[in-house]
Length: 285
Image 1 (cartoon, one colour):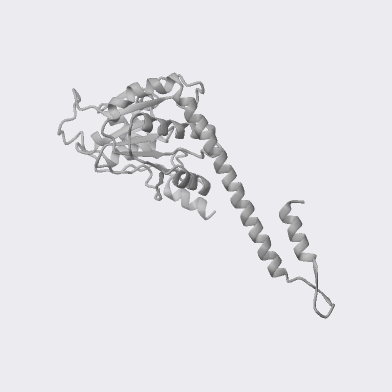
Image 2: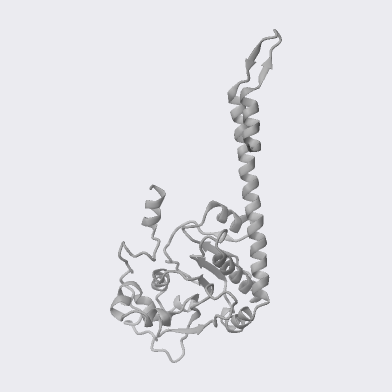
């Protein structure tokens, strides 16, 4: 029997002697109130314990990365491109409280920010974040958790690093579409799955449906693969740095290049993208 159950049992059945010497049951509403207080305390203690545990694991992951050849090589490629970055937005991290891959990815972006001397807080969104994960990011780590599911459609007016670890290609596609103009696209710096891999692994006719802007971005962005030398091979695989390269690229002010009149749309049965509609259905299921 747990401590809570034992106390509840004692409170529910303990007899109290009145001034007249008669016995009567103790009022159950007080017992239930106290029981709920104990349960709330136990829940808070358990949450705090889990948060402390994950913070310790996150510190260990950061220490692991900081002494790795992988991070050193990444920083050599990233730091020149990250100069001037004023915002960091991370989408699709996943449940880092119980997933080692997500926890190392969180540790990675924090290490990159610190080593590259970027002062921006991280802005995070994932529709699968639990309340405990939101609380950990905001209050324990001092980051920002975005509230609205924009499905990647973030418009940026200043240089922004987007970290999208193993994110669905539709999220990247939406992000590119939202910034598809000569004055915004150069502000987009992406750490995500390789554009080249996306383009090479599917025929153009399919890519035009669910990754049309990635297909077009291959000619406008410089891609720098991050060599996957980390000791865990499935955390940073197929990850590349992508940034706008305006040298020797056929962009210019060509109206056809910058045409983005049609907003991307995807089939309802597309399993990669967790849309706002899917989240709403899950919430009321």
